[in-house]
Image 1 (cartoon, rainbow, N blue to C red):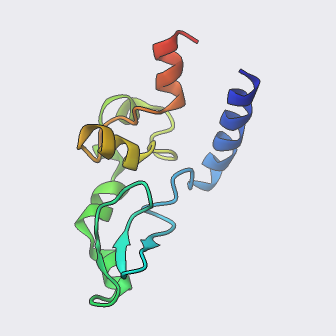
Image 2: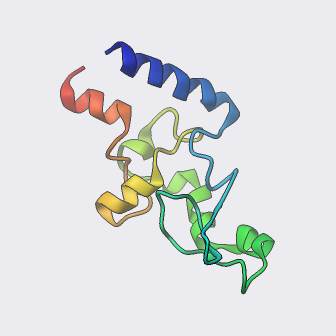
Image 3: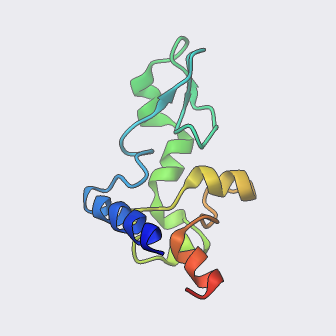
Length: 117
């Protein structure tokens, strides 16, 4: 339980900086072949830096636009008081549900609720 507290304390200390999940506001991942994805956990191809301008992809990507609009979040993430700062892990949500805006199934708040902590 102490370890969980320390992880939560660290994660929420980052909320004031609005980058608990850096993508889609702070960084992107460029794979060795040039493919651009939002992050290593969200394997949604945005384009390829060898074929397209990275700034245009950053500014015009429909996927990033959807990720940036926190009002589109669903379930617990959409109702969470930290929605605008955290948004949960979009990669985990997409991997588990096929929906990029679904609730993060690994969210600490959801886990606590499920386990009755």
